[in-house]
Length: 183
Length: 400
Image (cartoon, rainbow over all chains, first blue to last red; front, side, top):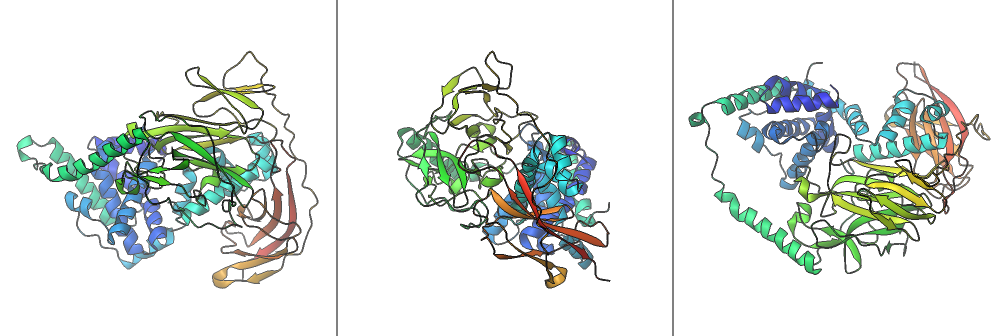
């Protein structure tokens, strides 16, 4: 799914398309679990927080407005609030799940291991998508596609130093966000 | 791809179906909404606080609350550094908020690593700060000053909504969409009403910029550093959404582009504009790709084993790093990392690489390159030739 498809999935979910919400969940399950795993370091807690996050999103899906932000930004805004609320109250909120009638979530060892493995790459993928486009392009070209700086500079019609600065600043932001300085 | 928590997927799907069925059921079978009366005192209290804050803001006597705290780890010798002592300067520029109250303003802060940060906030009694409204600071209705030692953690990366740090001497234009009218970012409520949000256009254009033109045809003169600030009601579009920000910087001899609400920048000798103008357009410098690196040093790089499969690569620093304009970089087959810290000339540097084969894609070896890179020269708005020097390379092989 691309950002437009994410947006369409939420809009269809708001029109009572349960399948669209399931697709939205499948697309963002790993990034959200990875986000919470990195924030808490505990797979079971990450699962619990993710469940409350998706429940809140389902509850308030009517309020999603694509003019105000992308679907992933909205989802992770909710995730940050769930995390913040849980820190403040010292426990994982379950109010939305209660209102929706969701049963308690059981996380077995296999699922816990899978969540623990997510902490890195899924968060990085999402954080990359949130970078300014200039930095995102430069990082994709250099880090993901392993192209040389002079080649990238020629394509982007700027100097090698500019490409380096974009890569450097983008990676600095990614590290700060993945370290939880400002999720 | 299978989900990790299929039970949750199933439960959510069923909840979505129940929700849909409930909304389409006859009204008599729907669950009654709980009475809202119970929430009224809280809402009334919040509204009273907000109203009081707004009223006090109008008279310029908002009570002062606790100072804003740093949002991340800070150090004088890493990242953008710390504000240098005595370097914080509130600019005289004041801009009215669309709803009134305390005006907006900016301060300039020089850091210990050679960056110049421009911070945007609300101003009271010669101090810049944030307001305790719209969810910030527990809606306490107070003015929370920004202490001299506080910078946003990600301002240097150009993605903070209310501040931008650049290497001192770099001209830039910045814009941020959907900043809270409180000027607070860390406690932003992404579901708040659009009417409470603002779009900010601000920047430093340097001493040669004399005037800006912005949306609607209005213009404003510039002086000194060429600082400007525009605060408008938040307007979003398919390309500008709440939470997005952007920075255009002057590099390679080209001035920064008009951004956000800005339409045109008039310099002493030329005009930089989004649309064709009658005046002399600022020339685009001829771009010449570099044909090679300078003075590669081919230093031998000793490697030692670290904990848990990591390795440590060692080198002797041939150049000092004293600002964020210079840095050593580590490139492990495309996985680039910048050592954002001060380094003394001749210092032995140990670079831990936690996952050396993370970018190897199954290959048995990976080449680690240590580079020294310098960007633009601090202290001037002129560009400088880029350079990147290879300090040394070492090939790592997987253990058999």
